[in-house]
Image (tube, rainbow, N blue to C red; front, side, top):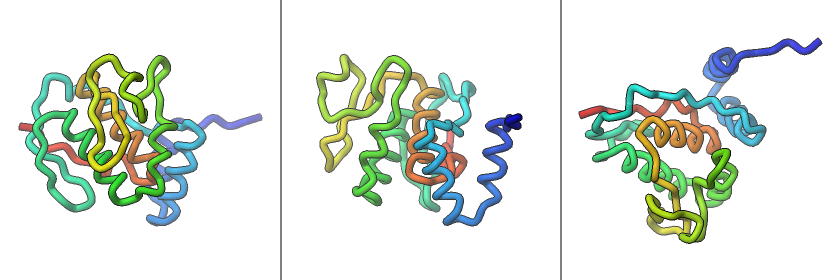
Length: 149
């Protein structure tokens, strides 16, 4: 008999791990399509003044801006891992591509790369996608703090 474990229990267990082990666990869970992101519906209709990531405050003007800047920071820091982005997909659409033709509207190129991201979504979905990107890179989704207006 297999014991079922909830996402909250996995999240708590991973949070207690030493940093190196946590990074490995987050990457492994992401590759297994275990999504530890939390939907934050309360973000819809809210503004952003900045976000805190990696102990630095970054200015931002929208949730889209936060998403794009987090992806830019990660790709700049770990260019050898940029392929991890292409594993993150929705049920009906791609979120990352190298071709503009994959998106109808609401897309942006990541500065310094040929990566194009889908930004055509609401604040809650962009935040959740941001958390999934962090997890794929082995970073705890809770490490991103959004500062509202």
